[in-house]
Image 1 (cartoon, rainbow, N blue to C red):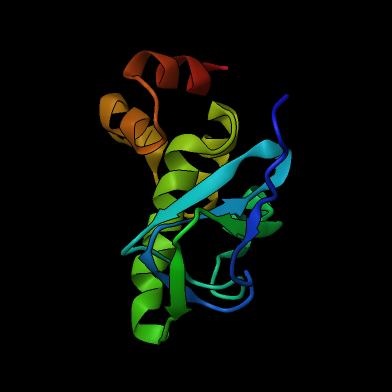
Image 2 (cartoon, helix red, strand yellow):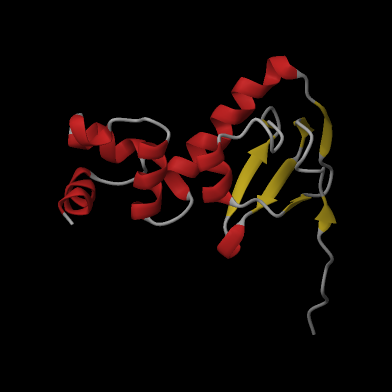
Length: 134
């Protein structure tokens, strides 16, 4: 019989942190996640644009064994925010949700090359075209 292994609790979502070893997983709504490997960081909840915070709805964090984090300062927040945003745009939520998030953040995806626009939100040109035609 398989034994249940408890999750290792990660750092608080409220304060910015940097992952110095291992991996932190940010648990989101609907069993989705943001994965932050060593070298990456989390900007804290307050620096997240409202549209991104609502889209992600972060709940808590957990980490892999051997993970170490340290508090991050303001200098690290832009890179941490970029990591979170990149994952949110390409892998979190449905295609419709990712398109809405990109547009809410001011990305003019409907007015650029459809291949490029599709790649921004983690899809193909064909799927992007079908999405904006609906």
